[in-house]
Length: 187
Image (tube, rainbow, N blue to C red; front, top):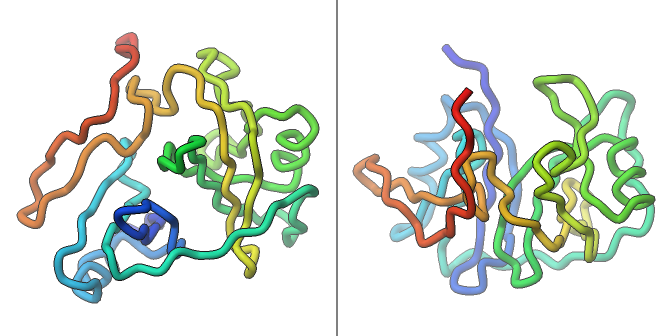
């Protein structure tokens, strides 16, 4: 059995406002889907580790502006969702206190790569940077939202957003109208 955790975002349609963020094990996903209101839509990111569930019944969260790093327990990560100025969800990653500090100090999005165990500035090698417009958090301070000006593409597969496909109720992939701004080089 996989012990991989995935990030679930409930998103209110048609505003595409975030209603909640939770982390569950991959094995819990079918049960989670069954608990959702009928007629939800499901968008999945390029790495299949973040899922947006969209429905009109979800209530948007209220957010407050963040001006200093959120204090985290030692070695803990906080989920970070990047959105563009229109509120389109671009990607989800993780941050720690150092990445938050660098984001605030430089004005560009920094994250912590759990797989590489290191800090990274979005776009440092590709040039596809994320200039910070605002940093937000819900009242429970359980995650961050970076509102950014995205250069070229957020997704390493060349799409403007990592959420470029929808999983249909029968499990098939349906492409979404997300611009593909470059084709990645094959290594």
